[in-house]
Length: 226
View (cartoon, rainbow, N blue to C red):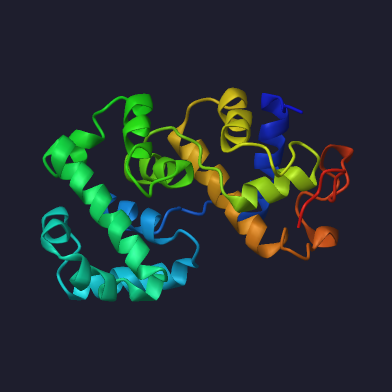
């Protein structure tokens, strides 16, 4: 099932009335946001904040410093983010890519056309679609809609797409139905994250959800998945 522009914007308006501007994503610089996008895989953001704080305290949150850090030095610094050996390798892979292709400059990297840069990021070992799109949207201000587990849960429970559908199928739902707008994608994704945390949990709170009764579809649709 696809959604029209009007239907997608009705969801947006319902969520916006509930949450207002969320000013997402946490992070002060493009590099900090990019590092956070890699570290947040399979962990809560509070843990990522601890890891980033440790990198700052060690004066290691720069492309040059991260390049110079050995794996054995980097891994303990990001321990709070979990899977720290795996994530240290992924960070090193990203930094190697940044230096090898763009002389360590995120400004140069983000001058690259969005579709080509996305393909390049996906070729970096350890960077999947969600991480690549998070880097593009939040660090690079490029219109690439981010799909996460919350989004898949919400829209599968409303019978729009099956949870098992591909990342690309879910992303296409938004990118075909919405204008290519960084602020719109940013706010929309942020609100989906919040509603996923607040209402569309493993045990959903459908009776008080802002999307209750949207489009006349029951909150737990025929293809629901917890």
